[in-house]
Image 1: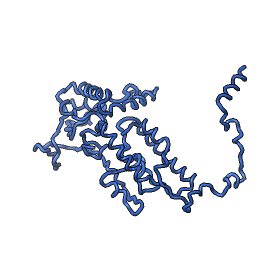
Image 2 (image 1 turned 180 degrees about the vertical axis):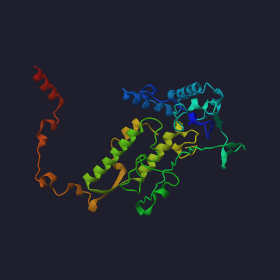
Image 3 (image 1 turned 120 degrees about the horizontal axis):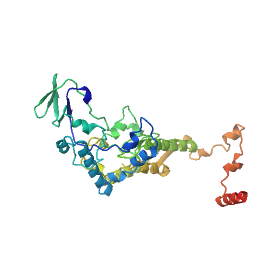
Image 4 (image 1 turned 30 degrees about the horizontal axis):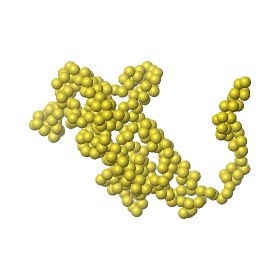
Length: 333
């Protein structure tokens, strides 16, 4: 907006770390050709240590972020003290903001930290009593992160998910809630990443849901529900884990629903979602028959007269590795 206005008043409600852009050299190639996506991914996946309190990576991160902000505010270094927060980097969601700090040093920009108390026909009034004449107001007020459902979701016994989550949204692996069978959630409570690749988490969560549905189809299950004790264990785990991370420090963050006081890595999530722990669930079977998965003794192919014996094909046989190696030697000879 700066090049298009005569003057810009920028209201800063709170301080936050403005981070360097990850893999900047590779991203700068986006309009030409990015030759090595793995370099970008590697850098994104290599910073989990910065979120654990007291690690060398976490301590170093503050120095790196501070020097970056100093450099970008060098034209008006007096702005730095009003922007640097007391909490460590990543306690709030990181804000790369290319060009943002540089714009703050422009002579046509005024930084206003006093709270907005009123908007009138001619401008904005702040808590210090100042009236700021304004032509256009651009709002950036955040978004709802309470995880309250946008439509009614009712579980067993008529319980509402909105009521269940009114105080604290508790889940199992951020994906399921006890008392709500066959209900799966993508990007649920506690699923937000402080670093890493969120797309991987979404993909693996959908894979996890698919594993559950496949089990239901295979085992003749009508309803699958996570156990309450599994939800309780996951909640305790989250409380214990976040206490040792920067996310548990005193900062107002959407990670914590806007609160100041209280997220593993995406690579960790890949391992967690790789295989469901079926013992954490309860099951209801079609016709209340737990052995119904056995069927009637026939396979579908037999009934449809489409029998195959391709299990005899070489590519379907799990030959011992030693035999395969021996065969290769003989052929080579």
